[in-house]
Each structure stands twice: as structure tokens, then as C-alpha cells.
Length: 415
Image 1: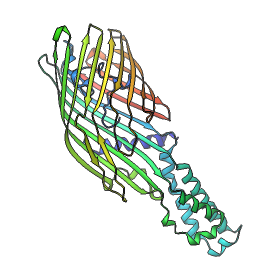
Image 2: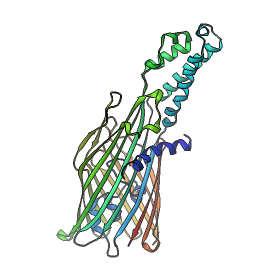
Image 3: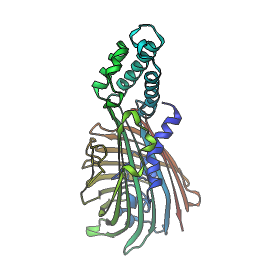
Image 4: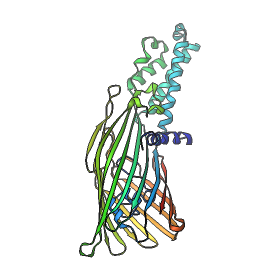
């Protein structure tokens, strides 16, 4: 795939966040945790950790102060088949086919070897080849952004949390009858006289969703039996925008996916919750639950097609072993990550490590896998810089199977 095509597809997902009033939906973006295999339920910092597990707010250290996390952003793309480029480029083959039909003398369609005969035969064959190449291909992109204002407190730690996650998916329905018709025209151009090109049935689909959350996280630590246990909750306003781009594949343009013609929206209420427990100085376990209230939201009906976006509780368990030099972490989803009903669900596990050779430098790596085998498994990595321990800059990148790659960054300032 050409690099500019990759950036264009990723731009589809990023543009949704920029267009809305605001890694996937039902998720979060936090550069340090993303660099460590997507782990963070028990290991994320107290401020940005509120995006993952609100209980982490209560685990601030004595030297922590009011902290602003802004921005935290990230994006990921998977397009092993170069679908975004192919599905847009089909317009060239369609235009070539129509030009050949409009410019031919019908008499030449019965004369093998004539210019009109060769043009119509070649254009029909090119379009049939393009349709055949699109069968079964998909491409997807995810993007996220967020901010946190965290205020540590021994009685009740609080934070304002805002985040937006977008996901976009391109796919196609290729009607075999279209290919058969075009092959007949390729073999016998005169048969085009009995074919109406406007009756071809193949379709292109673009599904996209933005979920934006605005909430106040609250957490407190308890010490039953000498075991520090933190509990947290984030009541939040949840806004959702859905896009159902369904058109004839011969008129498909991925630039049109986020048009308001294909969009509807919904506003509701939801809750995140979580807990952590410390065992000794080096072991922490955690449990987070995002979107504890289930919601089903229908897309706008377009060309007789409607889909449903499913928001479901996402429960994740995590553990971490940490010292002044090293942190090792592991997370696993106990429930599936839902999305559009037309798509397969995923369920992730991840492992990560962070090494801090200097007070101001951290190096991170990890691995994340989908146990349902419906999303790409990825290797992750990143670095963190903390000059004067007041400003933190975190960078991450990922790469995986099926031409999956992504990047993210995060800025945190402690006052």
C-alpha cells in the first residue's frame, strides 16, 4: 500500500473525532499503557489511569499534585488488501467502461478486432477484474483522543475525564451476477446491447462510530486488614454518532463516509467503575468495568440497509509487578469488545514491560492479541520523557499482522 493511501484511510477515523464535538469504541487511549501491550488496569499512572480504571486515582503518591493530561491521542489502521485504494479507484474502471459504451458505434460491436469491439471488451474485462479483486476484502481504522484534570486527595480523589473514540470499517458486497455479466460483455461485446449498466448490484459499505464520554471520576482508598484497596467510579454523559455509508460500489468514495447524510446520533448516560489492591510493595491487581449499562443504537437506514451499534460492559482484569526500575504488567478482557452487529467481536489479552534507566527516561514494550482472532495481533513499544518530573511526554507505536500499524502521544503537566 502507498504511504499516502495509509494516511488517507487513517484520516477517515481521525476526521470523525475532529468533526464530532469532542482505539476503538468502548476503549481508551493512554500512550504509556498502549506502548505496554494495551495494559494498564493495574499499572497506569494515577492521573491518565482514570481513563482506564477510575480506582487508579486513589493511588497517587505524596509528591503528586493536580495534573493535566492533554492531549492524549492515538490511531491504528489495518488494510492488508489495500482496499481503501482499490475501492476508490474502481471509479476509474467504471468511467472507462461508460466511456467505451458511449463512444462506440454499435455496428463495431459485431466486428471482432474493430476499435469499438476491443474497447468495450477491454473495459468490461478491467471492471470485472476489479470487482473480483474486491471480494472478501475489508479495511479498518481506529482513533482516539482524551483529556484528564486530576486532583489527588486522601479523602476523595476526583478527576474530570473526557474521551472520544472512533472506528471506521470499509467493506464491499460484490454481486457475482455483475461479474458474470461483465465477463459476457468481455467475450461478446454485442451482448452489452441487452445490458443496462445501471442495473449492476454490487455495493460498498462504510460503517463508522464515534463514542464521546464526559464524566467525573471519583476514587478512595481503604485498608481492610492492612491491604490497600482502591475503589473508583465514573458517572458520565455518553454521546454517540453513527455513520452508515451504503452506496453502489460504482459511486463509492471513502471521502463521503462522514457526510451528515449518513449520520444519526444518540445521547445517554453510562458508568465506568474499578478497583485495585496492593499486596506488599511490588504487587498490584486491578479490575475495571467500562460502560456498565448496555445500549443498542440503530444507524440511519440508507438504501434499505440498517445496522446496530452495540455498547456492552467491558470488564478487564489486570496485574502488575513494579519496582523503582521495572514494571511488568498483564491485562485480559473477561468480556468481549462489541461494535456494529455486522462485525465480529474481539477479546484482548496483553503483556507489557517498562524499564526506567534514568529518572527522566522510560522505555516500554509489549504485545497484544485478540483471542477471538478477529483483530490483528500487534507488537507495541514507546518511550517516555519526564524533565524535572513535572512534564511527561509519552510516545508509542505499534505494528502487527495484516499490515496493521499505529502511533500515539500524550502530554501530562503536573502543577
